[in-house]
Length: 243
Image 1 (cartoon, helix red, strand yellow):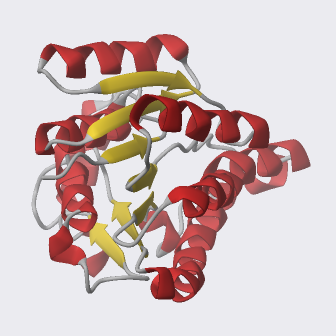
Image 2 (cartoon, rainbow, N blue to C red):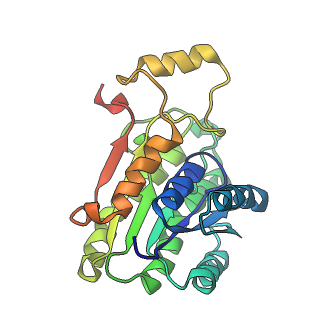
């Protein structure tokens, strides 16, 4: 592959780390971004051990100035941005009747506004063949109690990609999303084995997903093989939403 560069937000742990690893293994230069300096540095160092070109950049993706600096550092390090993976997200459980405006705003800022801010910067520098890939969720299609704000934010992501895909099609930049189901990560792992087994019982594939399952879909959407796909959301959930 030509010398291409990918930015992955929320790449310090879990799904984001899996995506960053898979892109690095495919030959991309990878900017590992996370709100935790320690986490993104740990991921970047692991990638470097495999011979990959990786750089850690701390960034609060809900902050316009920090997002601009993320892209500025990427340009200084690698000179271009070919793939943007908007993965950073939060999902604090809270009953709707107890939810405050600050709770709502925080989730929207991190999960949806960040996609706007990062995509805005990406469009300034991407050339034909560029890829914007957003990590959505099955929560955009089915409801979860205690996650009204999260479900709304992911529904917003799915709506945004369709409109943005139309606007960027003339530039030959595709915009797609991957919607994970139940994925085993440090943030989502269920300590209660009984609840975990109940979740697995609802999944036709009869297992929890792994970060690699999401990363594989992202690698495909980042590749030339997905050149005729835009404005779409690929659900990666082991068949959970079929029922």
